[in-house]
Amino acid sequence: MLDDVVSVPLWVDLTAVGVTSAQGALVAGQDPGRDRLDFIGVIFIGIAAGLGGGLIRDILLSRVPAALTTNSYLATAILAALVGMLFAAPVRRLAPVIVLVDAFALGLYLIVGMTTAAGAGLGTIPMIFIGVLASTGGGLVRDLLSGAPIALVQGGSFYVTAALGGALLFLAVKPFTNIGAASVCALTATLLLRVASLWFGWNSPRPQTLPVDLRFRKPG
Image (cartoon, rainbow, N blue to C red):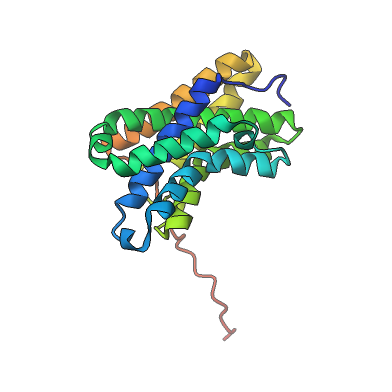
């Protein structure tokens, strides 16, 4: 179990929520099947994208969701979703900045999720599971609500892979340093893996079938 739980400044957490909410509404509003969605639907998907990871984390840990303990989270998510929907063109021009902040949010939610799970007494494997799910849950909820292919399980650029790499590095570094340094290393690794995968076009490996024939054959 970890000796502390990572806490982040509220403005940092709200920035991450805002970026993911705006991105969620932007994706939902520009989806080829967007005619199925009305104004409220797009806003709702944006809010769910921004708050989804934290809600999933806290529900699995039987905690009151942090997003419901103050007005700041919902207000930020609603405002950001509106911006993402109504100002799609200017927001799209900020794509490089959004990618960087989104990658930062991925690492941030990973670390907060892992350390919160550890503080609740969970073991190493559940801790990784909670951390990765918390960091990718917003996109999962967005895709489920919009009826889009679920990016979490699609082949493509490192997303879960980046989060998993950060989680493993965190566990590898933690015994030799304090939780703050381990968190910075894991967050940096997650960010770099995610950005590098987009820059160089890296894709997650697809499953391979082993060349073994296990069919039953009758003797003789």
